[in-house]
Image (cartoon, rainbow, N blue to C red; front, side, top):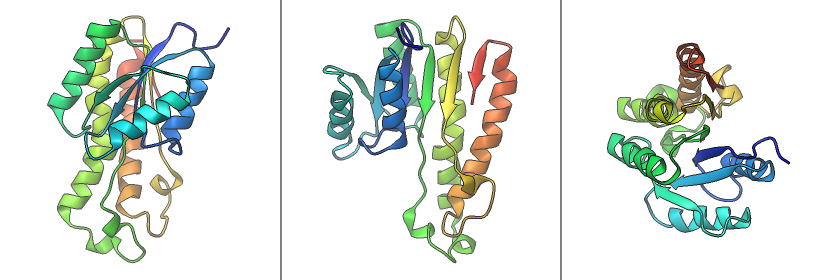
Length: 188
């Protein structure tokens, strides 16, 4: 008997079997959770995520394309989940991105507005967008978790705009936890 027996959730952000989201999914599966997965609809991402799910022992995974920066894409994921599973117990938000050309030492001060805002959108605001869509499906409460990094608290040379995005994510988490706690939805 596992801690997550009977619980259902969606994992956002598995890139491959080496990503943090993969290892979180591994623990959830070992504890009895039923998982769905999203993948960024570019290149070989669907194949990579399907392969990662299969390595977890999930032969026919619930797998949906999702661009975390696109409201219609998020709407489709949650509508399809509701159609297929009805309720949702948790989501794992492991979505982050910043242009790698600006993730180098001595580059932060040269970050253009669109790179800065893009990092915030993908790495932080997408948590709010997912929470908005997850709430109605979490009829008996639920949990929303996400990943941060030390570079969101202290300057980490070369982490640059990702540090800003992670700081924003950490505060977004606090505000969501405050807002959703009364609905019995934990945000960590």
